[in-house]
Length: 233
Image (cartoon, rainbow, N blue to C red):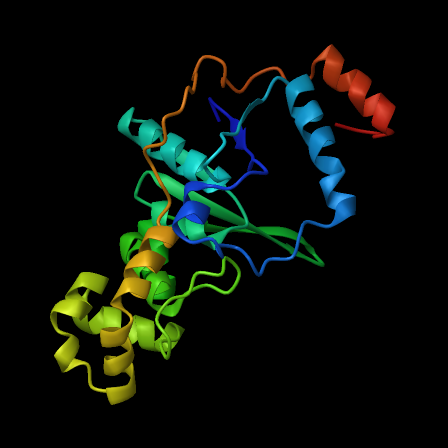
């Protein structure tokens, strides 16, 4: 790549927690052994001259989303590398989401542009947000609409095209229990959509000049590798 940046979450409430106090409330804390590594990761990235970004009030996903869209507008082709499938909503013809999966045989990467998202999930990247708003997400504690699981959410999206389309034609929803749950929980569906939407217009002071991907083999990185007992780089 010509440019490289790594985004981190900040240990502080985000705008989503202000909207919904229980957001991510069911998630287990990061393992202590991993937590201890984070400052070392940042130290290593700094030694290698790699730009890191973090901002109070936002998640790393929002920062990645903002830089991805900004870079696309500049005419750049973007790769976003993350284990988080929420980022699939950012996929376009020029923004590729790369999801590493570690298997016994090594790490394999699943690549998703907009076409691959549609092929695998039967919805476009933007529609992916509405599916999550309907079915919720236990990992992030996004409530969703009761009685609507992944299959029902995908069927509703196929039939009506969007969350707004579903509510415009809610009387036409065939299954009574699902229809009534949708009618009774519109506020939850709207809240869930807001929680599930990655913000792509964060106020970020991002420098492409500083983020140039070059010269990682620095004296500082070498010294840190020696200190940590790594045998190769």
